[in-house]
Image (cartoon, rainbow, N blue to C red):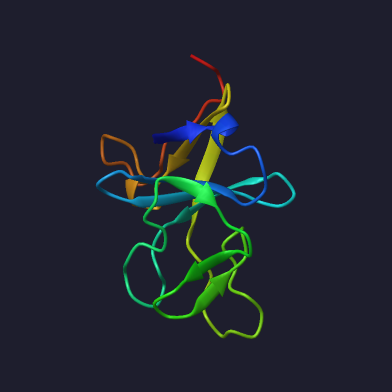
Length: 124
C-alpha cells in the first residue's frame, strides 16, 4: 500500500496526482462526481506513462497523445474507440490520505494465496 497524496491536493473534478513506486506507476484522479479513482498510469497500447507530471488537471479526460487514445476520468475507454480500459487499482482514504494498492502486491507476506485485508479503515 502506498500513500499517493492528500484529498485536499485534488479538490475539483479532473484534478490528478501521480506516483511512481518503483513497482507501479499510479494515477489518482478525482472524477466529475467527486469520486477518487486510482489507475495504472500506463498506456494499454504500449507500456509508457500516460502522465509524466506529478500533479495537474484534466479538462476533457485522460489522453494518450502518442496513440490518440482517450479515456474518461474513471479510466474507461471512450465509447466507439475499440480500446481497453485503464487498469483500476484499489484505493482508500484514511483521514484524507489517499492510499493505493497494486494488484501485483496481492497475497500475504508469508506467501499465502489468500490475501490478508490490506486496509482496516482505522486511522493511525
